[in-house]
Image 1 (spheres, rainbow, N blue to C red):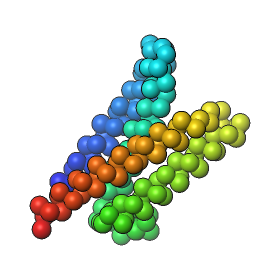
Image 2 (cartoon, helix red, strand yellow):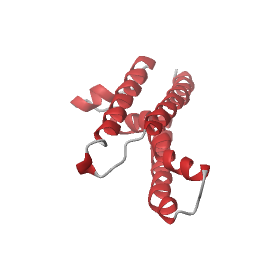
Image 3 (cartoon, helix red, strand yellow):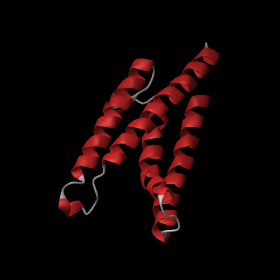
Length: 136
């Protein structure tokens, strides 16, 4: 149960961080140069890092269809959630090429989403390993 609590708070604080960057810092244009680039990729990096935490928090112990796809009970499940999440991130980014959405396509968003998701795989995997060893 401790891993579910950690996942919950990671998602909550990560979401607050993303909203702060997207709706507070970036609109003010307070940063120039490389700081502006970092603020541009931060929501993708943090958001993709939160995917396994969110999947575990929302779907742990549930039995409906989506929960069966996104459940995380083993490292194989974790890998599948990260791969599905990355696929959905890439699809979302390519959908931004359609002009009616009014969004901008950026390869850096895909690249830093991959970095965030890779980091989440290792961090969540280590947390999952340490809390399953305690539970045994």
